[in-house]
Image (cartoon, rainbow over all chains, first blue to last red; front, side, top):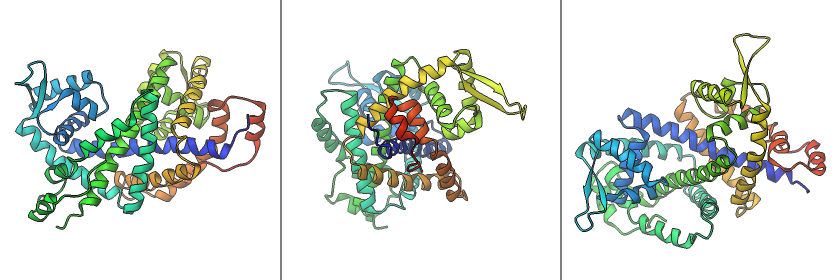
Length: 197
Length: 197
């Protein structure tokens, strides 16, 4: 076998870069979340409900977070006890359980998300708009390959369509949770614009 | 405040893309590691020792994995019980504890790393060499910003120099753990080549 070391070393470097970037970003996020009295897992569930819209099904939250329904169900149990969310049985189908915010939960989500989004924006500020687009697209190519590896035979086009649908919530989520609320922002939020793919 | 929604939405998309890509990659890795009878944490410690070279200090392993020394120390305790590593007190400084492989540990590391590297290579195969270089460099820019955010006043140039030093191990690590061993690969491995930044 002829080994192209330059290429192999780049793969190794990239593998480590992805690990390091994510791990450090998570440390950054954890620090902010902790300051706001939440655990990382609680924050993730609250942010999902905020993004998917109330009431959210446990299965949808799990899917959004790439976690198992069981593990999210256990986190939700603890969050019910902590008074952050409520479980509500669907009126149309009693087998389906929805999760909604308590006012304590929603009140914890807003300031932590604003603080977090501010830090993410700052961390990404050295990258131009085009750099960010390129990074998004390259990571996307990798992500779809990983999805195919995890689920052989998966229809990646279907995944892309799902992502397009969820993208419609991006603007609403930004206005509601991530950006400082000003009449100007709200007015602009009403305009039709690019959606999140 | 005038909000550039297109730009804010891209930040949000990118934030989620980083989360998803890493989370799915980790699922992929976990599946391989499990098949080889290791936990993710055990694998990470073994791979670090393999990369840093034996004997490795707990502090160096922790630094390499961006974890606290305490948490790595606890993992190492459990790994000693599982017969995967040994703790050896340094002869030159009795306060320093080194960690070395047992043959069981090293034997578990090689096949799992080969399987993992093969999957990483496959996942990255849709990206050209230039794409991979671009992805590495863009993630790097983000990573150094996050480091500055976590440690204000940190000398990022010093971090880069450290990374350069560690890069020298990439070729050795690839030959020893990640690539199928062939005389041809070994011959090539002896050549001087690009180092890992």
